[in-house]
Image 1: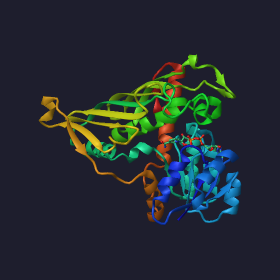
Image 2: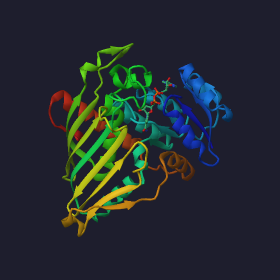
Image 3: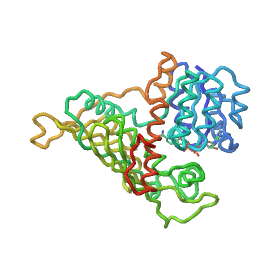
Length: 354
Ligand SMILES: NC(=O)c1ccc[n+]([C@@H]2O[C@H](COP(=O)([O-])OP(=O)(O)OC[C@H]3O[C@@H](n4cnc5c(N)ncnc54)[C@H](O)[C@@H]3O)[C@@H](O)[C@H]2O)c1
């Protein structure tokens, strides 16, 4: 299979590494509008003889017969590049968030559906086998009806240097700036934790969100205005009657990248805690049956399952879209838009009226 990648920054290496592990799959061409980034990437993978281009247009013109293309450009460019790729009739694996807003996301869903091509969004944490078991356990009804959920996404790159210095690197600075197409922590990592919650518990009906931008970081660095949110708290009401809190911050010192989801149901509870090192990705915690009265939790080891990269390739092979697809990406985008509106209006927002 012949693959391409648009955007050769930070996350593109992971795309290449994961695709190259799959038998008979090769990334043959990449493009990036930033020549320096393109050359660093081509040099890093020089043994693979990948062909590089400076625009997507040129890559699509000169390269024929892609089986699929990964879109790893920043959020602001997802729509225009994805529409170009679909227009050419190629299957697409797009980074999250699907778009900058729900209107754009809907356009992308319509284009994908018109093209009848495989379309997936890279909600990475779906891959955790413990999370999949959590979803299956809730959906089976074995622990009753969901009543209350707590979902947290913790990063600390604004207060630690594990991933470098945010003040000095473009890959962090665009994430802090609305003009550069970012919806801050909400759009960047909030999409993951909302997808995590919705896919496990069901659709959200209403949301009340409090977004926070810490002004003492400074107003601007180079041409990046630091006006996007650095974290948020959201109260949510699900269609099925459950309620919950969904929170996200880039100031969670002690956590490089953690996602914690607890779902309390009428006949038991389940919990996962994903960590940066992926050591906890296969561990599900469950409290049920006689353990309910003992306040005791059982630990279940869940064997690894296929990742999103493997699922994208499999979707192409079987010509059937494995989740998460663009429709799911748009559903999450609608929640993001609702959170922004809720914060602006200081009121609950009915998701179905957005
Ligand atoms: N799934 C995940 O867990 C995960 C993790 C990290 C990043 N991401 C997502 O991946 C995307 C990229 O993030 P990143 O950290 O790699 O950013 P980055 O800034 O490091 O890299 C993006 C690259 O895209 C290039 N680019 C910009 N516009 C382009 C265009 N029109 N055509 C071709 N190239 C273009 C830039 O020059 C840059 O090299 C973002 O949408 C981000 O949200 C997802």
